[in-house]
Image 1 (tube, rainbow, N blue to C red):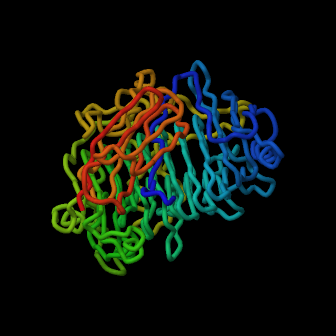
Image 2: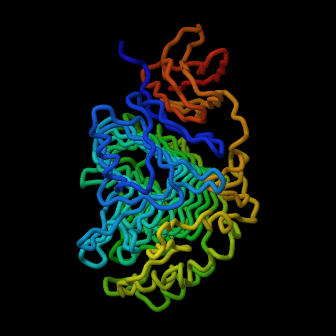
Image 3: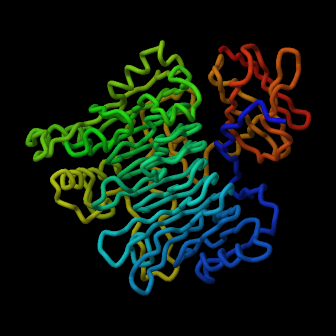
Length: 579
């Protein structure tokens, strides 16, 4: 019987881990875990050989933290794949993987290549470094400046990626890139640092839909509780040239980006809540880039951190509804530009002209004119909500200021680098924040731990989110570590949260929390007590918090009840469909 409900989003938002326990992917049935030490063969040779065997491992456990794992070619998988780092029991240092310089002095471009349709790849407790043993970036060829490495490359349709507690550093192409249709991505409690290509100022991106001229449709993109520090390009770019079923970007720190941090113009269902945007989009837009380089379907000439545009015919057809059905919230974010950047804008533009021969730039705002008008138009866009957003200096650690001026492990400095880019001077030195340098003379070299962000991303301003938590990545708010969260040992409670939005038409979202791993059911009942939709049917879930979206296009207006069950536990939420 055809299901009455379409499951649009089932994604892990957070995984509750103790300091000495790591999570296994329970969806992979074949084989047993394989423990791998860094002192053996290249990591890609070990895992690729095992994947090709008759009974591949259920997961690959990386247990060495006193030296790095190296790869001289991609780990290529057309199966479900789980890579689990086992942190050092005392320091919580995660295992590190880095590329190896090849005989022709080139560097492998990709670490993981996922080419199996409808597969899931899970990564946890890992440090993925894009620098080789001799400090060259992944993807470097025999020609200078050719670096374009990607840590996780998706090359098939309907692939799901789950990454929790992963550090991505100095990947000058993408940390996660996808050329497949209907990719699902869930990234939590992770750090993307120093992804700034020296001369190609649009690359160095955390997540990117590598769209073609016609684009690729995306599944569910959830990026929560992460830090993005010093990126040239996007923190999250599902692009939305075709539909993205669901987009969520909450409790993140996005600190210093050259270009716009988000590319979500055509999003139909989205949440961008409780983030800190600090010094983002700082290089602005010049005459050549205006209007199409940083737009999607409309030639806007004002640019901003948050920017939406009307759906085009492709997205509208895939969405199956009009503008009035779009559900987008932008709540309790804080957006701030340090005075050094705003002063540079004024000083730079004072000596430039806005013309094909000039170098003047258009500078960004929090929300551009078109987007502001849409959120104020409650007739056309009744489900767009942007409230509680602020522009306050968070007052981060002082070391972050050095990113702007540069020197040593801060590279050329963000402002000198932007100055060179805008004057077409083609800089050759990157900019960044306490960039890792490989010590090739050390037999057992590993990156600095804990991350320097632990101290510098702690802020002193009072910024409260829509959920009552501090705004931004809560891993760092109190000076805590990405690897040891302050709330990890707090027991989670079983329950189904209120539907959002509610009332709704035709779709809504639920969050639910599982206190103990096990089988669960999530069903929808009508007022007569009849089951009219089964969302989760006796499926295994690990403990944690999840988000799910349901579509009730084929149902009549009225009152319904969402019911979550696990063993003797039961949680009920009322919801109202209004058409």
